[in-house]
Length: 125
Image (cartoon, rainbow, N blue to C red; front, top):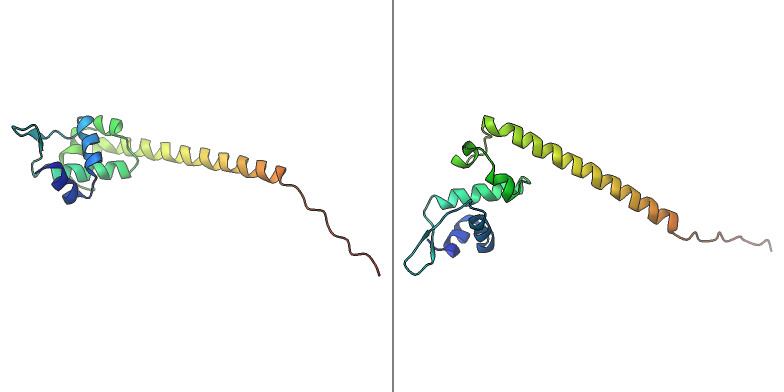
């Protein structure tokens, strides 16, 4: 199948599929005219790669995964990969704390620089 058909079957863009190929995570055959020719196994592979990306892994991360993670399209995490998942979760937690801290500093900066409106006094008649 060509890249357009693979994109339709997986819900991924052709651009994403080209990135997966460039990273060495997807290897299509080539037709005589040089066009990509993806086999049926490419469909679950692309869906699995997209799943890992949605979990927060980069293509570089994915390229280092143990073979068990890339062997089957499944939601179950193979034992060799549990540490990688925990490590990524810890990294996301650290990033969230850092973002929350930055947000708080920005909010405090805004609060400190917002001009205070003078209170209106009501004059006695």
